[in-house]
Length: 113
Length: 112
Image (tube, rainbow over all chains, first blue to last red; front, side):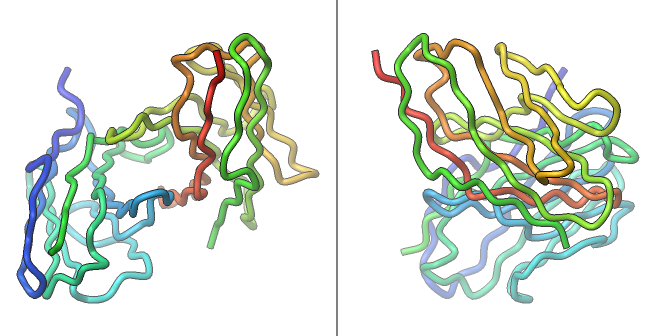
């Protein structure tokens, strides 16, 4: 049973560039949440997608945007990258109703230089 | 909005000793509470969760946690720590709309 799959695992971008991260949820899960985890910090909530719409959003600027597809997979886009965007980006999926807790992917390590 | 505080940034225990990691939450309604563990460079693995009912919950790897509403706490415990338990531990609180927020984490070091 495949869990949450994220791609790529690592990437390096230059300041000002744009990046797209991808996430495939666990089978049977319909909700996808994205988190940013800076080094030595806890995961910070970016946003959550359900039924192809952004349902919740954390305290992140509009440079961070996302999308959910009909097959429940999701993308996170970050425009005009800053050095401070360097972090581990985690995708988590959950079942309808979401009471089971999240299943996390292994994350995408983004380095902005 | 809900929030979580983990007062201890770093804890060191000897192998075989008992462990307690503290977690305090803030939320106006009945919280859904979770503990996750993260090994270096990895995603988060769910250890245990509390939704309702028995306030002492059992999880994987021999961990347990106790929900105390009067203290707004959900502390994680293990009677005997193994070297493989060294990792980062995160407490999280979830709302009914499925929005989960995490604490800053506690790093556990296990001495031989």
